[in-house]
Length: 180
Image 1 (spheres, helix red, strand yellow):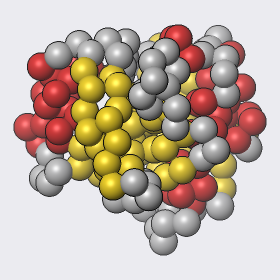
Image 2: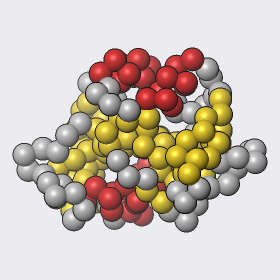
Image 3: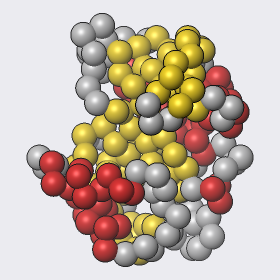
C-alpha cells in the first residue's frame, strides 16, 4: 500500500507493528518507513488513535499480512508537541467497494490538533487516492448528527450531503458522498 503525502502530513499504511505496539503501550516511539529517508522515528501519543483502539485486537487477529489494507496513520512532517513527527490521526476505508462502486471512509484525529486543518488535508488526500482506484466511483462517509467539525471537513473536500439515517451504533447520522 502506498504512502500518501500532503504539505504537512505523511499518511503511512497502518502496520502490524503499530497495532501491536499500541496494544502494549499508551504512548511510544516507533521507527517507520518514511518518504525519501528510509525510516523515521514517529511519536505516538496516548490520545492516538481514539475510538478505534478497542478494534485493534480484532484487526490483529484477522490481519492477513503486515498492513491493514486501506487504513493509514496521519503523521505530521514535523513534531506537534515534540521534535519528532507525531501520529495525529487515523483514517481509511471501511469495508470493501460495493457492487455500485461505493467505498465508505472513516477518520478521527487527536483532540490536540482539532481545528488546524489536518483532517481536511488528510481526508482530501485519501479521497483523491481512492477515486483513482479502478472499481471506486464514489467515496462515502457518515457523520453523527450535529458534529459540525466533521461536516465541515467533508464539505471542504467536496462531499455533498446525501441523506439522514438512523445507525444502531451512532444514532442519527448524515450520509455524504463525492464522485470521481
